[in-house]
Length: 72
Image (tube, rainbow, N blue to C red; front, side, top):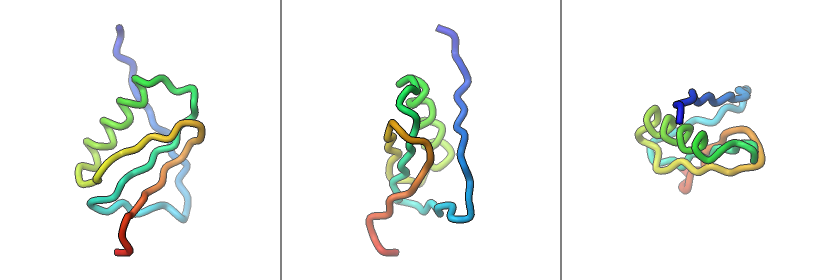
């Protein structure tokens, strides 16, 4: 199987979330993205954001958000 590049297009806006160490990053993707591509996206985010607690993928929408369990 050929290795295909993974891209992640983000719609950046003025209300861009600030990602802090310990945050859980929620990535919303279209439902038709193959599982292998989702795994590569998660791996890339974990590599580039090593201090996040976890990266969760929600299929069916596109965008990105941050869940912060405390009021810091």
